[in-house]
Image (tube, rainbow, N blue to C red):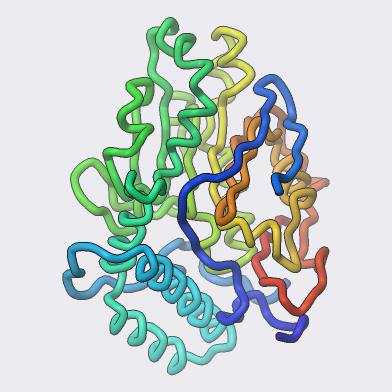
Length: 325
């Protein structure tokens, strides 16, 4: 594969993946974590719907683990090809790719695959990791008498670990709601809060950012999260809460960070810092990377110069990228 490949190239982009957790990183809830590992172009649509497949026929009841991974990856790669075709102005090619997605089963089958990947039997509920990280502050939340306000973007279930924790008041949104309790809404079209009352304490972006169809769109999404987080609500709270919230929980396929030409651990940390975030927790498994970021500082627009720049050249790497400018 040539290094000069475009980000939207379907054959070598960061894959979606799911699977049981295998490694956990130490964390420091009062400051930046010390991390270690265990052994450009036209602006595409900012709407998340530009990166999601169409809805068609009712899917089958369940999928094998292998079929789940295959289906998720196929949808991801086809949507990358659609983005490239649209950027190239090739409407016919984009329409043909959408038909291929329909033949695969459309959005409903993709969402079934995602739900199967999140099942307890497969260890796929990423919010389990979040609850492990928040375990030390549960007592403080209960003593405060006020539940944490959680905005779950890309929600597929109302029965995950966060939903059962008893410490959250949850707003769940997804492009195509899977049922009662999940609002059908595009985060990039969600109205900006008018004040503290409409803001939240924590946002969850679990396997969402990698589905935004363009690098610029991903940067826009991360910047937009800052507008939804309440930086004042916890000012009078216990120390543990002040050192944790407001927060952003983010999950990505591991290759998006570990095997990308355009991303690295250092680059994502610097990019998030320019938005005002510091890393509290980090965990890497064979397939996923998990982050908990706290919005602690004011954004620094003068530092937000993250163009599409190769930081890890190589023919075997993928093209996942986040552009912030």
